[in-house]
Length: 114
Image 1 (cartoon, rainbow, N blue to C red):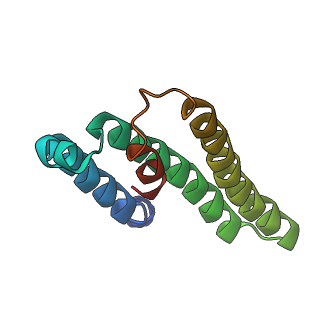
Image 2 (cartoon, rainbow, N blue to C red):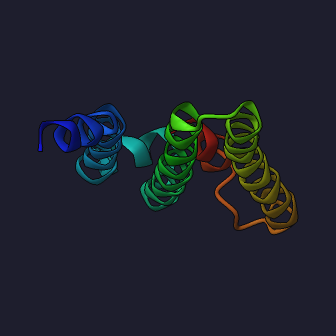
Image 3 (tube, helix red, strand yellow):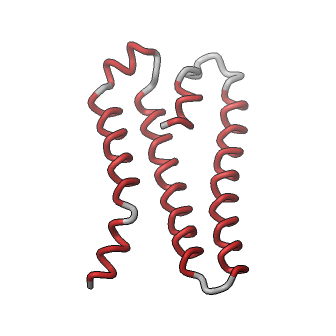
């Protein structure tokens, strides 16, 4: 039981940061709007980054527990490739959407930094 509790505590900082940024996006809508950011876009970006970070965290944890070097590298590169694939797909999406004049451009780069 104690070992299971340790495994669950490893992802706690990731969850705390996600909750803090989400609370700021919800609570600071007026301030974010004054700065020119769309809180909905930032919240969606925060959720996407949380999901990708959590999945890559699971792959990295599996890599650290794998007994062979090949398994370690496979899981580590899997986590890196997952992040790269998501960033490239969002970059492509961002480039396609910026042709539209109604896009909230200040929120798009912040989408990746939340």
